[in-house]
Image 1 (cartoon, rainbow, N blue to C red):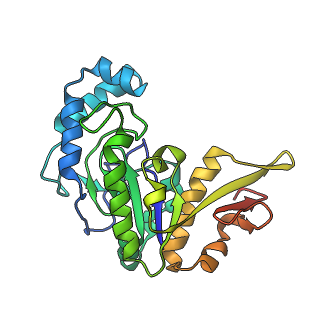
Image 2 (image 1 turned 60 degrees about the vertical axis):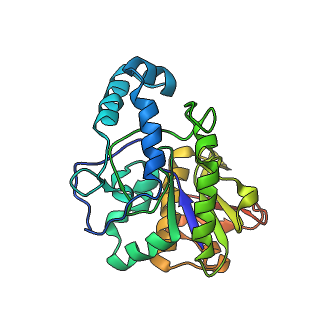
Amino acid sequence: MLAIISPAKSLDFDGRAPTSKSSVPSFLDDSAELMRELREMAPQDLSDLMGISTDLAQLNYDRYAAWGEPFNRRTAKQAMFAFNGDVYIGLKSAEFSERDLTWAQRHLRILSGLHGILKPLDLIQPHRLEMGTQLPNGRGGDLYAFWRDKVTAALNEAIDAQRQPILVNLASNEYFKAVDAARLDARIITPTFKDLKNGRYKFISFFAKKARGLMAAYLVKNRVSTLRALKAFDWQGYRFSAAESSPNDWVFLRDQPT
């Protein structure tokens, strides 16, 4: 069983990672190609391209200028500890044991606009590049065209190393669109998380993002390798709802946030 999650806009490069273990992204040459395109843009161009403030555009302009090899622990940080958004609040990777980290390296992947796909301990440098960005490149007009073939092939390679060909899709729609699902050699299970509000179960973005990280942590901590074990996910009050689920789209409900 393999799981995928999205990256985060928020980054933490100040705190130290709780492990010295690290790896290097698989597609650094491709990332460098995108960086060459980005470095041609002025801060205002980046602001227009990404729909971000001028201050954020300047920050990322400076990040792009500083980005470069070699990727080592003096200039970079492991992706799982560098990303700091809602998914990663739920993941709580700082609490992982060394054995947890080893399992996560084999069974968890992070989709990325700059790197395509990352293992949890792959080193990254500060950057912002969302997968939905309409950045023209040598392979097409956006990052989906740039990454789809390589991301799909990399996922198939990782799936081939699993006991069961199952992909747990905990990524956002924006990032999962980078995957050619029809070419994946796996059954794709997509969990959805809903919370009770005003008498109805609803998708609430903040809680749902945290729940994706929470389920990823559950997979790691419990070494989940079967659908039965995945369906038993019950952390922080969530429970599987057979009535709301379809064969591959699984719904988990919660009555009271914790």
